Length: 391
Length: 157
Ligand SMILES: Cc1cc2nc3c(=O)[nH]c(=O)nc-3n(C[C@H](O)[C@H](O)[C@H](O)COP(=O)(O)O)c2cc1C
Ligand code: SF4
Image (cartoon, rainbow over all chains, first blue to last red; front, side, top):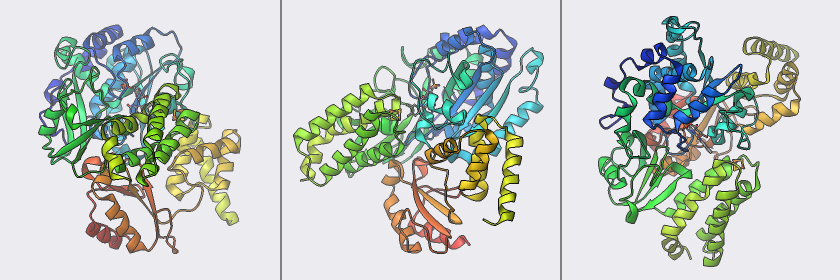
């Protein structure tokens, strides 16, 4: 399935020969161009890609690695599915350009187990690249060797977190590491490693082709470029869309013909719930950031049932390594069940919201830090409605 | 297990180690192969993998139990995994779940007596725009309706 509206950055006319141009030039020029473009990571955290690559490029090490994070596990996200199947060439090009830029010889695509059916397609494109001299030894006649292999996940949401992903690649349980050190410093097998989202990497050959200046002119000051959105829920036309950063939520809803919208969950289960009164807010790192998951709820929906679904997800997916997340998510889920049975006092609900705030600051990784987001935002905006309906 | 099965499994694991490597980073791909081929990873398979990778069996068990897709016990011929995440839930996942339970006479989390079908829930499959969605073994099914579920079950033999 294609991008449903008119693509902007991901328009095929923009691809050109960015890949060749990049490899024929100097590695540092790629890093500088990406830094200049203002590209930020599309996997959720939004770290500036150029800065990450500069850190990896300047690290002195006998080995370095490039990892494409294709774990796409955030509930409601499916845009990488499109890129992995229909922009596979550009994804590999982005990884090779990264390898050339930072001085790595090997790259891995960590593909979620649920996407195993894509494996033969991706491996086919990798083989084609080998035949065309774009992978392997002496790429484009340069003194540059690079190879890519695909590794599968096995059904663990937390493995999308980059340090857990690396643990998994190394053959361990996918338990997040303490940060720092960050992967750019101590990554796969202890070597400097760049981990980037699929969408981030696909953007790279396009930016090299069209230039940083062109890219900077799209989006907002702190959020350059566009975002691919995976839109599902109560809308007439669910699917994948590309919008410039800064797009108002209400305009996005009109684009997908959402009717009677009550609330929009932005950023998936770990994102925030935006009520009707706040639909004028916009999608950007400055206002409402998102890895691309947009789930729309209409007025017939029971917000408590939605919250329960999210909390069941987190209790299931917490790796259990640290207490705030392991115990906290369980308590929040118990709280939701108490509300459902009419047994939760307003006082206890306030305590639970405070617990959520504690989890945000004291959990070890992004899973526990963001898992209270839906609880806090849904209870803040819909708490009265929910308590009135459950007594 | 029969002695002949044991030696076939040992041989298979040795071959896997030869092609995928005997470093710790080969553990996941090796387990994934065994899981794919047999539908589960037996205690014996775990021990053999541990021996060849020179790691403690407890380490292998720790990995097998961590990942949702690895099984320690035999699995039904058709492992039906219905997405329970919110977008599929909004699109009547409950109705689909009920249809499966009615048609197979078991609940989610159970296996039919003839070990032909098992019902499980799974987290987001990335098919949220085409929900409700499910996996049967490794195959994806989307836009499910109760009617479609009955047809699919009839087509599985
Ligand atoms: C629980 C959790 C799950 C994550 N899942 C993903 C994922 O599926 N894909 C992804 O690209 N990043 C995911 N991330 C973010 C990664 O840790 C990391 O920031 C990202 O891969 C970096 O790439 P980027 O800078 O290109 O976004 C996740 C983070 C957390 C805490
Ligand atoms: S926050 Fe949750 S997922 Fe992250 S390390 Fe702690 S227990 Fe594991």
